[in-house]
Image (cartoon, rainbow, N blue to C red; front, side, top):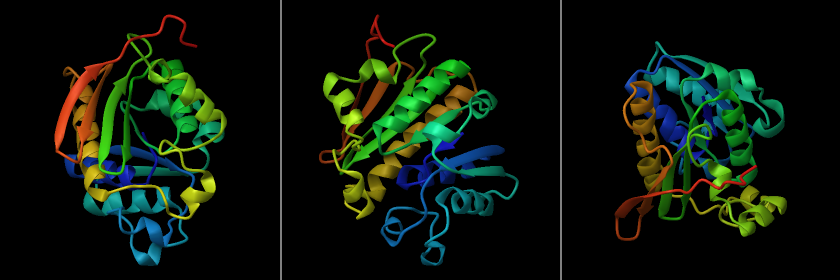
Length: 223
């Protein structure tokens, strides 16, 4: 299950296709705009106006014709049911807002599945694996400021929806490749029962190309 078909989602789907993943469900709300073309490997100018999820699923099949894909055009917070989470072996998020992450976190917890989150801002990025059943979840990492920003419905880069629609989200295709590469690697490890980054975060500093991992703490009063 790939939620989000933007810059990170494009890289995730490209990687999954190259790895030979057989069944992929892609979910996204938005349509392709011209500003997406410089940071999304699967989209072309002729795709503008089409739904991201539909085009991304189509292009992934072009890379790996034996991949079976389904797409969902809608708001994952309100419209995507738990059955898809229960179906998936791996849940991957490539999102730009806290509200969607909280929704995925809660749905993955209810379905009893870990999920792999990716986030980027300018040259930097993080990849992390959450499993509410055994350790810290996404909500355990949220501060009071995060919850206030969630209430204000702003993105991770603190941009308003209007600013995001104007193409002002600071995204680089190079950092997207790095973070989505780590996420896809974690997905492969999870599928094959290998040790993952569960409960930890991979932090990438794109200015100096330094990276490190650190462990999250589970909050005893986490909702």
